[in-house]
Image 1: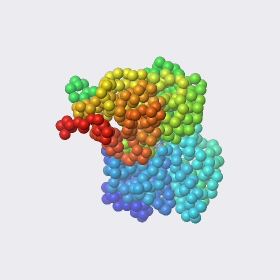
Image 2: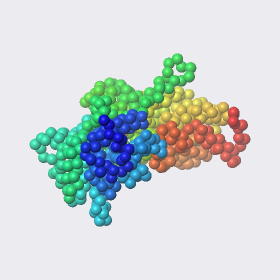
Image 3: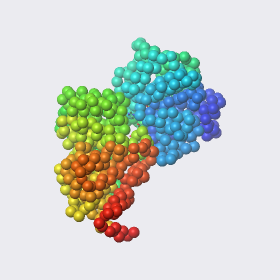
Image 4: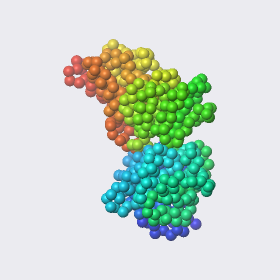
Length: 603
Ligand SMILES: Cc1ncc(C[n+]2csc(CCOP(=O)(O)OP(=O)(O)O)c2C)c(N)n1
Ligand SMILES: CC(=O)[C@@H](O)[C@H](O)COP(=O)(O)O
Ligand SMILES: [Mg+2]
């Protein structure tokens, strides 16, 4: 008999603390049912959250949040924490604009501290917070929940080095489910397995100065309460090694060989069908196109090796890895190491491909600059999730890569506009041996192919370059579809526009500058922060060349872009045909223009 809804009566950890132990298994069952029901609709991190139901309940019954600071490393496993801190009613709006963030969010709740969804930061926060509480005399405890995957990140060990030498009462809950997406790699994973199995071995955490409690069954409330109670009462830093199952309680997740349903998407829309086509014109996922082409190149060239930071499948390296198991390297969630390891691979005469989400490469900028760029090494970075991604919110949009990477001497950056160009540009990048190359493309499906009118050097003209055209649209990557649509609309108004896709957006090609010089108004479209992207580059080049062309950069502002759907956010920030057309008309008919404004067709 199912007890009346326990979950709906929990509005804070206080309500949780008064429940009898006997009610906890039913509460856990209700939380699991709700997670499966909601997340299968909204999309999100189902597997990780199913794995921390008992852990989260026991944490909030043992510690006194928000007075005690509970930090969730990466934060993707914080849905249960949100359900138990008064936000269960909003779970249906998970990962939607204006809804509930898929990560901790300070504006949502005082119980949330770290919003950044980049892994391996929690222990550094714990070190800083605990030092601050000690210095300011506030007797607040710090609890950091860190996954075994996040513990493969270098920052975690920088923090452990500091925490282990301290006497501060920091509780580290090591949530060990043996996986990131894939099974967690490396010596640490082997060591944790030894600890889980009670092997006779020294404990590296104890050697670093931590108390160690474990291994604990992370789904056994009695064991959890006993362990967390002991940790709470310890003086110095302590690690509670909790062993959990990712996807626990939902067999399709528990048995999911790929990644235990680490991140599930809401139902996908059917493939796009172009009117009049006999067969549906298939749009292809960018990731899949890349993965297939890399495997094909791998057949042709034995010097190609792939490097991933614990995201083999999400970055599309599955096919390459299956075909060439000895030429794929998973370094764990360790992007800095991934890049400099790739520098080593390149120095050995290979051509490494580092496949990584745009937002995560930011963490390894120094390694790109100094370990790859300074040595002009042939490393190709393939940045998936570049530009606005969507439901993962501010710390996942890949909108800084162009601005950061343009500062690396000798680097070349390409932005394919569709699957055909991705295949083409990947091969061009892999053929470039005199320094680093970058390909960047967004999350989701590549647009239907956008054909070439004329190739001018490396630049594709997507429309004719008519002598009377006063306006040049320069689009980066997938925004070519917006540029072409805008040009079509303007043509129907009698405004002729030239559309160019540079393909290689950095450095700026001389042929592109010639096109700029031929047009009075140049509008750039980029899915990147305009502070340092294509628009900024063209503006500066035009100025330095003394051109009279007026460059108007359209792109993302230097802001943290919120949670939302990619198409909606792009439109919100003016990266759609409506705004481009308005911008052209406004710029073209600016004071001093020798042309009368056109009659708007069909207005
Ligand atoms: C710097 C960084 N790299 C990659 C990711 C992508 N990512 C999100 S969760 C995850 C796996 C985390 O594994 P673990 O810490 O063990 O947590 P679990 O999902 O197993 O609970 C990865 C690689 C990230 N968020 N941050
Ligand atoms: C938490 C994290 O960083 C990843 O799991 C991320 O959410 C995956 O993003 P995609 O869903 O776009 O692959
Ligand atoms: Mg894990």
